[in-house]
Image (cartoon, rainbow, N blue to C red):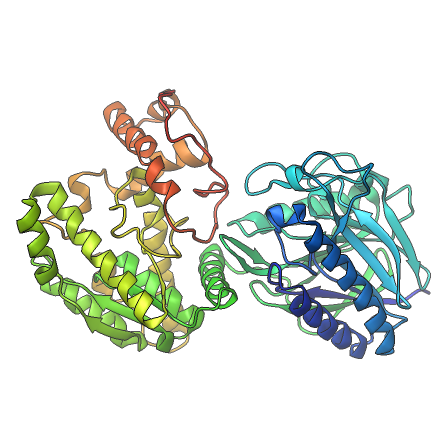
Length: 551
């Protein structure tokens, strides 16, 4: 009876750090060997990180990746691991006959054994939607790669190949595949793990094979890869599930396509949506900071819910001792807000300082004779100058604290509260900000820890405090209504007429959608932030700034 021990290596590569990524691959190969593995599978583009975007057009980059794979094969043999089959993702040069226009490279999966590359698969379906531009960057392949190991047949495919009909995936059954090895670079979205599971389950049933779905983990700019690698047998039963948002190595014994057994403690249940969203935001921020060479972060602490949640995410990501909060009160700041900002910092041990802005604002107001909205915006811009000055002086990454609802309607001051290098809440609507704050406090209590977010920050009406008695609802509908309209317009792409037909007030819909359209220029200049929904601002939603369409 055949018995192959399969290892799923869920790694966190850094784009462009080829040697560091290869070193981690070797480390995982060694651990897989020690665990008795016969085959170890890595994620899509594990050698270079993913996505490589227009690095795919640099011949020197692609050639370096190819040389790294060959050197890796030799080193695995030198270490005495030649019998171990290693399946990993990397880019490779297309032949001159294959190259088309901009695309000179291929997105590949190679199988290494006995110091040799015994076969290479090229991704067939190249996604050209949402965050993906692979049709621009890669040349497609069309052949299935199947190899035998200890009496079982394994076939490799890559990510999008299982999301589309046809191509090499349709040949798995004809190739008498026992286990499909699916290499993935699949970014996180709330509820996406359910769609992945359904796809893999449908695949194994249609092609009568088991499947090992191996995903990357880690943050890459505005994308977060959540891992969550899974193994299903040919009956569609879930056999193993790797950790979410952490590197992991999972071992499965394969006797046959319908006889798979997981080794060790890898539970099959998945956490709830709030846990997933929070950990996606934490991982996205942590990796952006660490992979770009920062040691710490600075942000404004207003006492409001957005800055409180951002500060807590940052403390979870890099440690409270590396987070620097700045309270910047004005003449309009309430005592409660100042107290809440200090309370937040104290609860979690965040570094805290106060820098009043009145003495900086007054000369500008006087010299430029500013009143009304220009004077309100001035306060936000002075705060932005303070944060960026501290960033320059002390080397922090500046975090901007705006949420998706505010960014949607332009409820922010360009070069003011939008200033910063990273926006943790960029893809988090206001309603979800509140929900995550309550969840994080409840999670702390479940661990017998202090609630990190002051209850008053959660319960009080949101306000920019740029004029007396100001609250957000002076100029915006209630956030539950606003978020419902924004969901229809942005996520579901509904027209004005359709949204009104859902029962919303026509004048309110017109006002909100007009605000969204007019704010596109602001969003183009904003900081990036972790994508957690199916329609994030930036890569997902690309609309012209000059746009007079009112449909």
